[in-house]
Image 1 (cartoon, protein in one colour):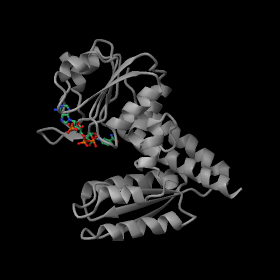
Image 2 (cartoon, helix red, strand yellow):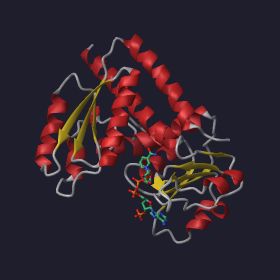
Image 3 (tube, rainbow, N blue to C red):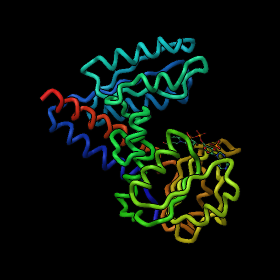
Image 4 (cartoon, rainbow, N blue to C red):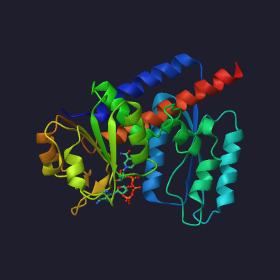
Length: 280
Ligand code: NDP
């Protein structure tokens, strides 16, 4: 079975559009981008386009490459104080001279639609998630939409980043899976991966995961966005061989990526509802 993030995100965006139209709310997402990195600019453009599609207002703050930490924090503080803004997204990575942690912590946890603020990460790990990081949140939606049972399953997450691997592990724990997190220092990665009923790969290495590393019938989620030696977009998983052995798998493109953006839209509406409730 192919887990089509493209199809599910289309469906979610359509219902989100309808919900926003009928809600009487005016959700607004503000993005902050620093410098001219083409990949970051493309991601921000995609997010603004998704906003347009579902009826979320979007605003963009653009800062020059040589900006200081306090200038970025000041821009975020203005958005925190602006009642018309419900979600704030600082596009990462930031230039070296900027203290990324300080910037993430400057975002109001109540507008932190990326779910990266330590408060939201703590809530997630406590089993009381509020804003969940969009990539693992989108993967949970895929599991849910395709009826993939997680309770009691052995899940292996490869990658321990704050944006993907760690929150993915927390969400799987919250869904009653038994979770192992692997990384570059894991002793026998292949043996760990072969145990997985649910395998999530967030490594960032083109077609790293081969057929012999995967258990027969596993559900395989490919977070990676990589380019192979010929410049072709591909994931961490060797799709052609692994898909023959797995029971369900996400493609790249058209798998996890679109779910990330759909979840960002959902988080922004959630925030708009929360702020509207506060006023009532
Ligand atoms: P990071 O570089 O922050 O993390 C990569 C993780 O993989 C690290 O924990 C690292 O281990 C681990 N790793 C690297 N090499 C190996 C190896 N040989 N064996 C085992 N573990 C290894 O990346 P992200 O988590 O931010 O992203 C991962 C991938 O997902 C990238 O390709 C990125 O582009 C993509 N991505 C896709 C998104 C989407 O929407 N589809 C969203 C976000 C990311 P260690 O900690 O020991 O260094």
